[in-house]
Length: 119
Image 1 (cartoon, helix red, strand yellow):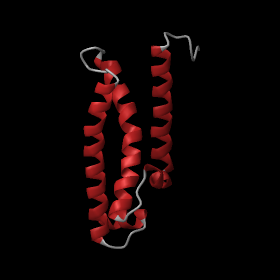
Image 2 (cartoon, rainbow, N blue to C red):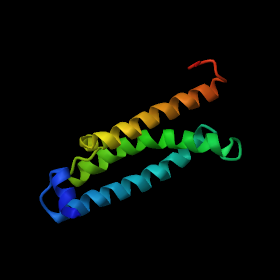
Image 3 (cartoon, helix red, strand yellow):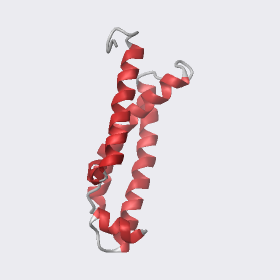
């Protein structure tokens, strides 16, 4: 399995795979920790909003933070890692890209009370 990852990511040694896993782990933890204070700053809390609105909003805040931190931690660890490097897997990338666009449109439609994106 590690050989498949090494060939897919274009790396040569097992320590590089370990570094990439560490970068992913640290980035996910830090972005989740940072998204909490950001939602507090904008006064978005689970007590004020319904959970079906709160969690998608928090994920929409978390995703850009994750991308920036992934590049930052990747560069500081000496590896360049991004979601867009996994664009080789066109099926998965297109599936999640279309799902994200659909979710964003539905959230905008919900929050604008149907004024935007009329069917």
